[in-house]
Length: 160
Image (cartoon, rainbow, N blue to C red; front, side):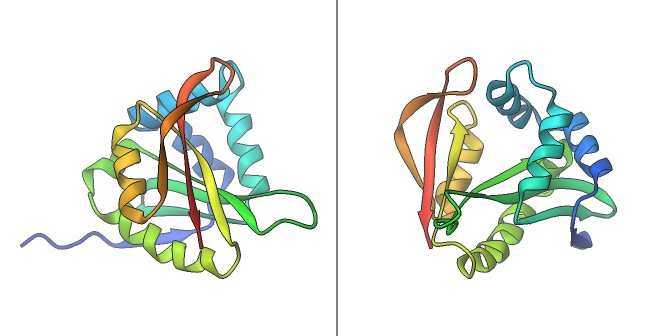
């Protein structure tokens, strides 16, 4: 029987963010392009990482699998909501189950900090939509135009 890979979770560096952008799995690359348009993905990653209240990078056998985090939204008085996000490298698909195990652990942490999580997912990203539902997110069936090109995205949300 094959042994499970050693999983390490830590705060990502700027270099991790650049590596992630350069090695995104295809569905995540398309989603980033639809979200950013012509904006520089490296600058966007740096900005998002700086705005996260919680952020983590997941490695298996010293290979980056994914980076995810929570960006607080709302006003100074209503910061009990956040936008969760996760982007993965092609290596993530080679280790099914790792993302779910890590996400379930971090959802428990999020419950202590926020009352609601919501964001948008590219309607083409069927695998991520199924995964969000398995985690307990409500994924709205109707799409909304999102990003500079008005691509169809689904709102997903969870009350904690």
